[in-house]
Length: 332
Length: 286
Image (cartoon, rainbow over all chains, first blue to last red; front, side, top):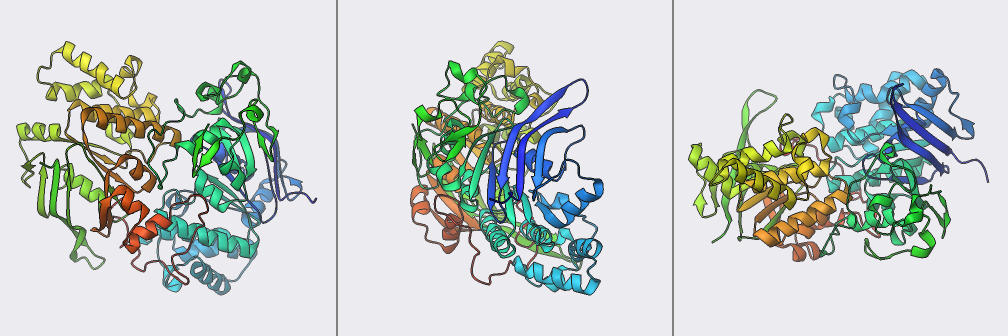
């Protein structure tokens, strides 16, 4: 088997200053093959965004990382500023939750879209404008010619997110990092934007790391899923398997906590407490204080180990088995 | 008697166009509905549907441009109410917003936030009565005395939303308007708040108007639902019936757009292009 497109090995991260350092990520390992999609799912503070940002080194000040990230077989840790710029310009593109925070409000859509092509790829202005126009048409934007001369404030959130996707895919990247790209959008727009991403991604053979809090959305668009809790991956499996037969109690709890559009339930709460960040967890399993199945041995350090076609960080995974899942509802 | 009656409720804003001339923008185009005491009505729609404008009219934050609004049998006129009338209205209806961080005073402790409501609304607001009622309300939403001394900043998102609910309950209102009140919460916390809302309604018979874009959440906490689009009600009925067998094409589209087992993202129609009216479909309704 050839090297995967992206390989993250034992990535750990702390932030803070000399006096106090806080752990954000603990031993995160991922593999993503060329053209495939991996969903990184978790609640706030789980470390899913930081994992994605570590890849292109978009980190908060004072962040320190350990471990290794390899892209196309080469380590990214020793990458120079120029190398990092080339990586971001040609190989790895990113789309964020709030497009308005990532676009210059003073510049026209056309300038925003053509800048990278002209500066990085040496494409001439007219040709870049042609490509920008057809990219806008590809993401379902009407009157692309006129849009090129508009400013970001003249477009709705859904339209602007389409522009961001057009911009990300214009450079034909090999990897797309999509961090909650549809969370701020209406559901009907979400459906359409994800369909567009899928269409273009397949056409270009771009792999995607999809970061979201929405397990069902991730399951619908990804080949494989990794669930994060308190800075660690707690379960990793093929998407369909993970949502139909979750093996980690936290994955099961996430599935059970989502209200179903198909049926009302007597009671929604499956776990008490709140999600925690890595630096708030003590030794042993970080989920144990909220877990209905916690035992004495859950206080030991847990390792991510193969269980039934996936990887699970739970010492009781085999004996608990997979809960019966009825249309998103996990019942033990 | 219905807890809330809206008859042909309208809201029209004057909007200045690019040419500097003002034009009317119809945010809510004649909405009519009733909610029985102890009932729970879901108001569903996307950006620009008018659902938030409707919530703001119900809460008295926007005067209606037309139509009739009756809460607890009393009509809410358009004239600005005096002090006594405002207090009476607060005991009839309270509102909980999406982000309690922006609706709670950051300088006040949780206890103070609730106490200031009790000072106004308790019949016999002695210090002891207020302290006892504050403790009772915090316990009601699953918080305790330790939280009473904390400021909103020190609380998690779920805890802040519990405080906002306790504060709304402090006025003992007949009706609570919940405007995307669980939308910003992590799912495991959202589940806890949904159960809390259910318990409160079962125990105290509070009427809910539950505004949300999330059909799963609406299914969980409402009996009836109205679906809004572009300021108009396009479908209404029992929540289960509307979600199981939607009749209006827009409700059908909404229902199809919810990810679930076997779901695939879809473009609206082959060759469909996004609306041409830039921000016309957006921008008034947050």
